[in-house]
Length: 283
Ligand code: NAP
Image (cartoon, rainbow, N blue to C red):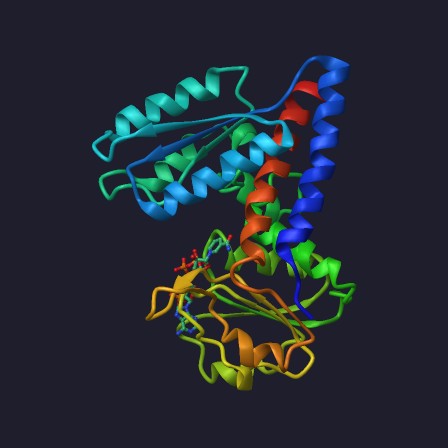
């Protein structure tokens, strides 16, 4: 069965829009998200456009501040300091990747932990691993929500995550662990990868290689979550999983596009509303 991330994220956004409208009616307040985009990378422009559209749908005031690639690290840090100090800004997101002359980690560290809607700030990362309330990164949180819609119990299952990035692999492994799965993290140095993946009841693939995971690497009946966003040799958008053949073997599978991608954007809206609620409503 196909896990329809587009439909699921639509339902979450509709629910969120009602919440935002109700709070606005009761308090006159509404969340505000500022997205910073450096340069003209087509992928980044498209992500930022999607984020702005989703924010508007939900009732989040939003703007995208665009800067040329030539912006200095100092100028970008000064901008973040200004946004941090602005009480009318609830969420700040700097679209990654940044040009090479800018230290990404320095920029992430500079965003106020309370406005870090991406959940990438070391303060939020530490809290995630300490199981303290925090802003959870969007893609991993979206993946867990997708898994929960299947009704498949996560507790006690063998979960294999391929990829150990800070933004997907590691946090999703932690969330699976928090949901009581037995988790294995595989990566480029994993030996006999197919043997490892065939153990998985839940397989999360976040590599960044077109159709890398083939049907023979998947246990019959497994739930397969494909995080990858790639272009194949014909320029067609595809995931890290060979979808057509794997769909024959898996019990549930996410398509690309229309699986994890829409959830990532929707979870950003969820995080923005949560940051706003903590700062302005539940204070
Ligand atoms: P990343 O930082 O490049 O990490 C890739 C991971 O894959 C690394 O841990 C790497 O292992 C592992 N890997 C690479 N080649 C491998 C191989 N042959 N066998 C096993 N593991 C291998 O990428 P990322 O940021 O996590 O993103 C992964 C993919 O997800 C990309 O396609 C990205 O565009 C996509 N993505 C999608 C969304 C969404 O919303 N849909 C969000 C974020 C990312 P090592 O650590 O050993 O190098």
